[in-house]
Length: 318
Image 1 (cartoon, rainbow, N blue to C red):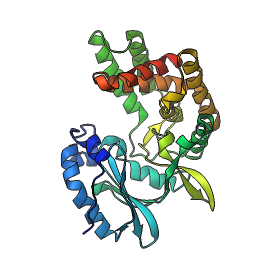
Image 2 (cartoon, rainbow, N blue to C red):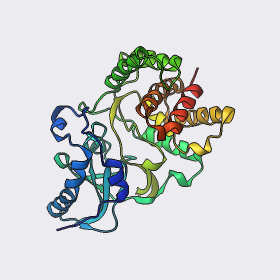
Image 3 (cartoon, rainbow, N blue to C red):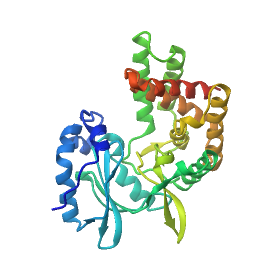
Image 4 (tube, rainbow, N blue to C red):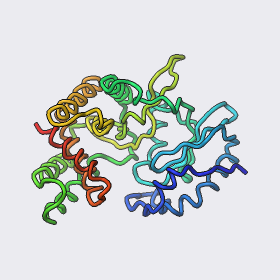
């Protein structure tokens, strides 16, 4: 039996997580808390390796809620990914199959019931942190342009997300003082309410989490190429996909006017390369950064993240 030691960072990140209440449809039966998932993860990895005839080929890597194990299959090197069940990852296999290796990591095999994916092996040590930020923005924009395909009907929609956020921000306003200035909460509520009824963005398949760590070096057409990984798919307005790059590499943003200039420059570069509307990207950034700020607002260790979210919201003002 394959025995894999769980990375300490994954244990720290997943321990104590409650089951995801936003899992719905057929995926709802998979909802499980982080501690229970961690206890069963070694057996899951072992069973998948046995069933798919995979041999571990190096130490496991991890993100905040998934283990990634280098393996060798009958067809060569690959990466086995097993994810903690949560709503953002429920459609990952669908998105990767839909893109078919076009600017995204190739899906070789999937077992949605185990949240297990067999992926092509990319260079996990080469992401966009190793290149200048302006160049990274161009790469992300180019990837978003190549990932432009209609969404399959089963992935969640941005309109659903926007409707939830409009209600959540209204609740925050009704609750009185909070960590974010009320005028920005009200602005985010109004924008979310508009997006919840807006069909003009189209039903495109979105990555929604395309930042520097989620782009790795691979091979396409026999040449080195940047490849997107770890989508959290949704359907809707492509301008939403610009936002994840704004909170990336915050130490390079500076302060004051430099910070505002740097953030708006990122939007400009990505939008031009991706061929999406800058105004819509900035509006989505306000909605999503409010979400990020309120999610961690009561965590004293996340004060810097809340401050960055407010700074981004200020920088995105018309």
